Structure formats: structure tokens, C-alpha cells
Length: 303
Length: 335
Image (tube, rainbow over all chains, first blue to last red; front, side, top):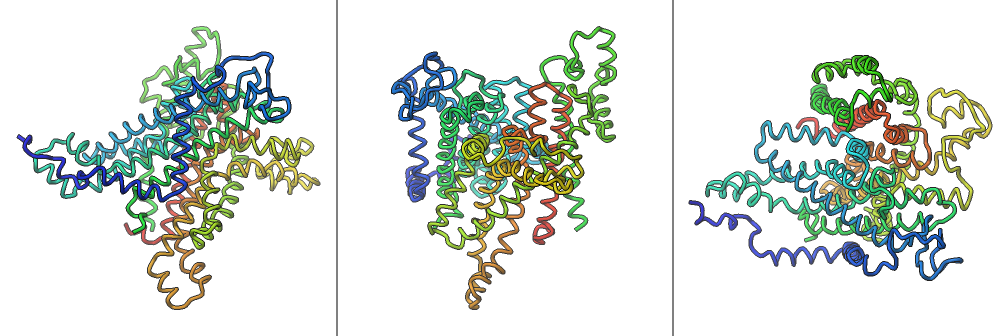
């Protein structure tokens, strides 16, 4: 019946994906910070992927003759351990490299879960309205009523400490932002002509929600996704630092900081380096996020 | 106006009920027997178990238990700590001023630096000042504050020896709490050096807790200011030949501050989350540290009560901010 109607042709920006990508890059590359963030981020991804190849040691191997060695350039450092060793003689550089895998993995998983659940909730709420909307949005309000880190902490206490549960908890806490954003976008789009046209052409609810409306709500979701990515990394590190995230000897940066706390006045490198890694990663992502927002938000575009 | 206020309060009722359900449900979804968890006793005899179960109301149906829980809440009964055997509410009230003192100092610091920095950055858009300020703000916004706190301890306490590492005041001083705010109490005590000690203990935690709100406020002020500076009435004021200082101060700033006030108010959630980390690092005896310790000690009545109280406080502060926004921005009221 509807086979003969090309529903997608009704969407406003269906023509020329390449053009919109080029336009996007034009605005994104105009932001030096964003490009710098992208470069650092790509570098981090490469380091994380290649960690098993480039890490000089195993991240969990304990060298009993090399405990709390300072970095190689400092007095007392050893050339085999570039960034020194921690309190049980593990190579800092190798642990940091493997830590990048955990942080990026956490970011990807948390944002994926939060995005999928948030988008579906927001689509349903915005599209159907009525009691579905009321119930879903009140649920989101309740989640947002708690300070995010506190709720994540308590959730992990319920589920049991560990990286997986920490990721689930953080995803749940971040999810309402996606739901609210999607709902707002759906409400703005739902009565536009192209949606009505698709509906008249016989598109079902599922098609309307996912194929007609959703692609036109993507811009704010991408920006929110980037921001959530950095939040997820920060929150997971905070949970690790509080002993509720990844458990030792996992080389997760927050967990490494927790283990290093008692040595803060004796061995600066065990404290400084993991935190610096977190800061650089989060900063790179936030720089990209700012660039994405400027490039994707037509209101801010310089004409 | 009254209708506006009542409407906002009514809107919060479902959320408030939701919060109590979360707090109520929390102990019931924990892995393990809630009776054992809430009683915190090991090797109970069956008679004792039945007694505790009846005492805590676990022998009744869930809806009954919930109504009973709400009934107790309304009478100020939030349960008893398993560790200290003191009422949760009393413990909370004893520790709360420490967190409020820290949070107030932090938000004051953040606003006092963030607003002028944001305004200046907007006026001098594109200048080196703008770029450095906004770059710094983004670093602050990306900061893992638990690490930032450790760095400050290493530098100011470890290397320079300027500030103490933990606590609210040196152990040399002792006086009964009057207001619960150490800065005020130390002055009231009249002891020499007490205020200086309290202040020096407060500096680093304040900086750490202020970092993220400061960054958010500076960024928000800048963009609010830029938006206002592009408005017609500002152009008109300029065209009339008003001096730039008057245009910025009278016409632009007053309108730009409306969203900024909201931003400052909405930092309460960020502050509460930040307090958890800041208080843990500096051993600051407030509710953030109390919650973390209670979670690791499995003191579930405390976690349950603290979760509820913190959420309600955040909600009430957000409501006040909302009302304030309506007060200073009449456009909102009539929607």
C-alpha cells in the first residue's frame, strides 16, 4: 500500500548528507579549540586501542624491586619505568595506557545505554502525550531530584560495587537529560508539515517516531551525548575514587587515585598522573562538545 | 502571584511522593533480608527476628509499610543509625551546618569571581582576556575535583605548609556550637586565633567545591551577556549616545543577570554532589562525608534518611530559585 510512497523524501534534510557534513565541518573546523580537542581525543583512542602493543609492562605486574620509583627523568628514576611505579611496583605508564581503555569504554557504554533508553522514553512521551507523557516525565523529574553522584552512589550500594554496576548507575542518572531533550524536540517537530505528510501517506507510529521525526532531532542529542560522555568519565572516576566503581587492581584512573591517596605527600607522580589523564580526556571531549554545539546549533551560527 | 507559587508547589507533589518511594524502596531492593539489614544485628534468634520485624513494620503488606513510613516521616522519625544508635534526623541536623557553611562560601566565591569574569569576557569578546578566561573556565568545568583537591593539598599543605590538611578547626580550640557555622562560632567564642584557624581550614575545600560552579557561572554569564548586548534596546541605548559603562551596567547587566541568578541557584545539586567528594578529601564533617561513610558501613537507615533529606532540600532550593526567577522576570509569571 504505502510501498509506492517514499516517506523519507518528505524529511527536510534528506538530500545531500555530504553537503551537510561539509557544512558541519566548515563550522566545526572554524573553532580551534574543538579541532584541538578532536586531535587529542583521536590520539587517546589510538593509545587506548594500541595499549597492549605500546605499554612497556603489564598493567598488573608488580616489580618488587621497583616500588614507588619516580619518573625516569627525576632523581632516582629508572629508564625502564618512564613515568615511575606505584606503591606495589606497577609501571605507571602501562597502567595509564590501559586506564584510557576503561575510561573510553565507560563513556561509550554509559552514553549508549543512556541514549537508547532516554531517546525511546522521550519519543514515546512526546509522540503519544497524555498519561504516557505525564508518567514518563514525572519519573525523569524524580531521578533529576537527586544530586547525580549521590544517586549513582546509592544505586551502586544497592547493586554492589564494581565497574559494571557503576556504569549502569551512571547511565540511569544521565538518561533523563536525553529523555527531556528528545521529548522537547519531538513536540517541536510533531506537527510540522513533513510529519503530517508522512502520516497522511500512511506511515505507522513506529515509522513516524524513528524514521521521520528522530533524524530531525539529532543535533541536540549529539551535543548532549558528547557532554554526557565526559560526565560519565568523571562520575565513573569519582565512584572509583570513593571505592564504589572499578575495584583494584583494575587500572581505572579514579581507582588508581584512590589507591594513591596515602602517598600524596611522598610520591607526587602516583597522584598527579591519573588525575591529569582524567582532566585531559574530559577537557578534550568538552572542547569537542563546545565545537559541536556551535556547529550544530543554527541559532549560534555566524551568518 | 499566589497562584503562580501554589502552582509550582503543586507541581512538586508527585516528585516529592516519588522521592519518598525511592527512599522507601531503596532498602527493600537491597540484596539480602531487609529486616537483617535494617536491624544491623547478627545471629538473631527467631523470636528476636520476629520482634524486630514487627517493630520495623516488615510483617505487614507493602502499601501498609509505605503509609507507615510516610506517617513516621511526617512526625520527623527517619529511623535510627545502626552505628551510633542516634536518630538519623538528629545526626543530619548536627552535620548539616558544616555542609551549608562550605557550600555557601563556595557559591559566594564562584559568583563573586564568575559573574565579573563572564561580563568582562563578553564585553571584550574575542580578546585575549576572553579567550584565557573561557579556556580556564572549560578546564574548571572538566576538572575531576577529587584530584584537584589532592593537588591543592600537595601544594599548599605539603610543600608550602600554609593550610591544614583536614577538619574544620584546629584541635587546640574547643567551644560549644551555637550556630553550627564554625566561622561565626569561632568569633563568638572570643578565643584568640580561633577564627583564623577556622578560616584557614575552610579555604581549600571552598576553592575545590567552587571550581565547577565558578566555571558554569562564568560561561553562563558570558553567553547571557552576549545575547543581551545584541538586543535592540541595547543598540538604542548606544545610539542615544549613552556612555558604554552605563549601557553595560544599567541596560545589559540587569537583564543578563536574570538567567545568571537561576544558574547560580541551580548549582545546589552540583554543590551537593561536589560536597560528597570535597568533604571526603578534606575530612570535612558534613553530610557528604556522612553519606559516603554510611554507605561503606552499610548503615542503611542513615543512607535512606540522608538520601531523602538531601533530595528534599535540593528540591526546595530549586523551588525557591524558580519563584525568585518569577519574581525578577515578570514574563514567566503569566505563562
